[in-house]
Image (cartoon, rainbow, N blue to C red; front, side):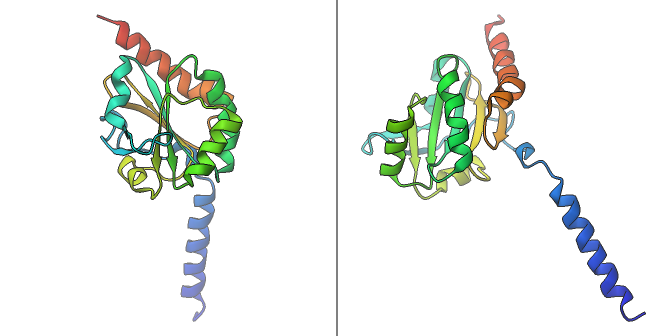
Length: 178
């Protein structure tokens, strides 16, 4: 009997841990869905004297992507070719997160630059304002600056086709309606 309570506690903790192992971390809910992209400003990655501001993203009168990435992030490298492929179809903005500026500039020079513009969030404070859980994260932002979708994890070709593209197309249909 003296082992019953510790055994029950152990079983309860084991059950909670087992349940947590089955959580799909790419479906982390965001309180920002359906709300304006937080207005944050940071240095521009390419021109440190210039500013990158999220409130200037929706200026295209159409949908765009905002991708939070880093050179030290293996899934970011995995998704990079996908962004290079889709950059002609949808404007992509980047936020380089907790990274070394020179590493990030070298990465884009070597691997290609799919971004219209890139902000530099060296200390991660902008990421906090955006509700970033980790990198990579990608937001679909409509022409009014409203976040329509958030994807946590690498954007593979399948993720783009099955999750992001349908949202992008729906936003475009809505923006064309009178």
